[in-house]
Length: 374
Image 1 (cartoon, rainbow, N blue to C red):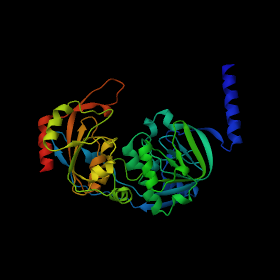
Image 2: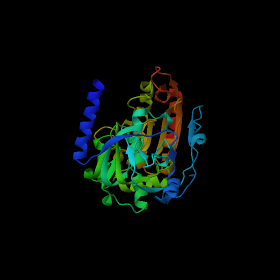
Image 3: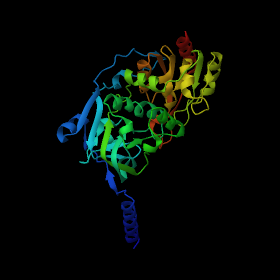
Image 4: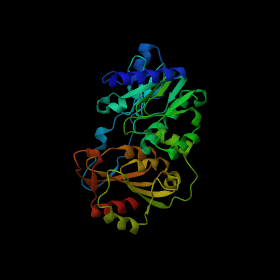
């Protein structure tokens, strides 16, 4: 009886949706059914345009402080051809903005994950389909719905690829976005993406359109190219005063520095202010005025994109999560980057290793800071 009532309710909801012009059904991103955009274009007659040619950026080796090497070079992937794919039909799924063709194939190069969808939870791979008419441009990207760093660095530079391919937001009917909050949404205003055209990603919802325009992930995982930083600075940079501030960027949520109270006197002694990314001041102003930035690995460092060339950067990382996001971002922005690895402290069983808190040796920290500032 209960199942029959549920079926009846779903049927009524479907009829109402059809009546208002929105057709709904369900879609699931299947594991191991994925394809690259150039191959999809060749097989199915879609339009693929290369905007940025493949490259392996030359990186200035980072300065290592302390005894532990991050091993960044071993996990840096080369950057493939980047471009724009236009397909007839298609669906963008949920807050990860996974892009599916009408054949049910994942257009993997639009995603941070590429073909590695095995680790994605079911909620990220499923959605009730809402159909819209016309052309849908996707700026969506994995993690950006709740993470400012991924939004700024993995989503917004997709506009540079669209513009390079001659695609104008003004000509699109809808723009699919993954936005972590109201403040972040204002950057879309500055970039000329009208609120009236935005379809904000929601959990459990997928959007299908007559024509879908997708971009490559703008770089490769954790490897940001130089054009990417140039786009952010030129289009979102702000006027700033003298480059004289020294900023410490605290962490919120997981990956806390457990002994930060031992480090704060050292930072204060060297003229650092605590800059809270969620505070009243626009972080672009603060980072543009910084001569030095120190912070734990996390989204709060994404605004390094707006630092002036030559700014000194000291990143603190836990031994359980050594990733080169901000090393490559700093390199592409001509910043002077160094890092110090702290000792991770295993958390409860339900806390994954990359979320573990950590401690930073105060003696090593002082030496690293003084060398950074020298």
